[in-house]
Length: 382
Image (cartoon, rainbow, N blue to C red; front, side, top):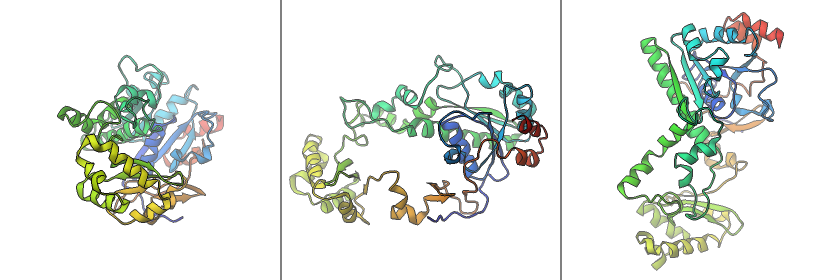
């Protein structure tokens, strides 16, 4: 598999990032910074995080370098602070207060480097009643109202969107936005600061448009009854004769007209577009039509049209889709197929420079490049 990305440095070339090893949204945020060219040094603890995933296949650690530092050792915090002194950004995902107890909290780090951007990734945030408690993506999106919107059945349970909505959309991406904004401020004014990126805040923010529709009376606070949540028969997913599925998003009138023409339905059923009372009949007609052919056959019917219909592909199938293959949306590095860096830049594109950083593999190299002699002590003790 080839990729259109070049070997040039990304737009964050020259930015130094210290990542305190964690799980989930923190590592993904640091990976995104690394994809865009930042020199990300991950501080791994001896023994690893114990996640059960092979470090050689943990794609969220690509484009990074790893050093081993025992933050509970007498000289652990001092070594991290030596790195912080030379860094632009630090990213951590501990529970509130943990970094402070380890001696690498915001006060200690900003005292050492006043221009530092200190990025904090948590689910509940740094304050509030739930801040000190454990949690995961599903709980964060549950209390924001986002999970309750997802699913086709108003009476059944919501559908779970893996951990993409909370951890990564509401968490990682908001952390990266915050870090880059604070980095701009630090470079303009010489003042670092703390970025408190809470998944509950980011996920709530993602619902802004829906809340506007709710306020305007064009959205019901009941899932499976609205334009974009499966309630609409021309915005949904339908089974095909071979057990596959097709995704339909024919919202605009001209796209809907193309959709029903190619699907082969018309008359009274197709005319029910604007009458909510007739939506059940329209849904039945659409479902019956899709069941008459295979997913591959329907893909051929709609290919190249403006009907806004696409096959629902599995993770294994997606990289081979002709459009994604042509764009190099997925790339292969060291035998691992993975999403290529995004977004794209015309002058400084991000690249896949290295595979997943193995814990501690780069300690000597980082000690040399960042001029941190104390890392050699950590390497020896490890």
